[in-house]
Every structure is written in structure tokens, then in C-alpha cells.
Length: 119
Ligand SMILES: [Zn+2]
Image (cartoon, rainbow, N blue to C red; front, side):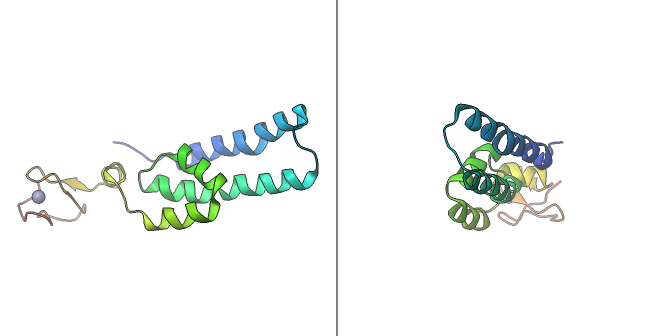
């Protein structure tokens, strides 16, 4: 049985983008000023939100995290609009119809698409 790994990925993203990247940047003196780091840190934490929502809908966590970092508002709206894909449905216990291949809710006893019984 597959599982969601939100917390693990969130912690990894937080570690990489909130701690390691600013450390490297400050070592290389790419950018100066505390304001930059506060903003960067804020965005790296905020980007976890669309990444988690999209991940729960079966999307790739890392790609959505970077998407959220770059275009937070667009990514946030986008992640609310998208629907569960097949990966998410399988993890959430949706059942695949052996006749038509459509996914039905876990409590369904007949396929919503073709009407044949689900075993
Ligand atoms: Zn069916």
C-alpha cells in the first residue's frame, strides 16, 4: 500500500531551501542584507503550502515546491483547482474498475462510469 510522505518532504524542502541555500548564499556573499533572508525564508515556508496540497492530489512535491517558490499566488490558486490524479486516488483507496479502468470512490459497489459491479 502506497502512502503520502508530506511531512518527510516538507522537512527536506525546509532544510534545503530555508537553511542550506541561505547559508551557501551568505558564504558566497551573493546577496547582502537581512531583509533578503527574511523574505526568502518566508517564501520558502509559504511554498510548503501549495506543495503539500498538490502532493495530496498526486503531484510531484519537489516540482510544486519550486513552482510555489517562484509564483506563490499562481501555484496556490492552481493547486486548489486541480483534481486528484490516479496516483492520489489509489493512495486514498479509490477502486479501479476492471471493465472500464475508471476510478470509483472506496465505498462504491458499482462503477460510476459503466455500472458494472466492483469487487
Ligand atoms: Zn467501469
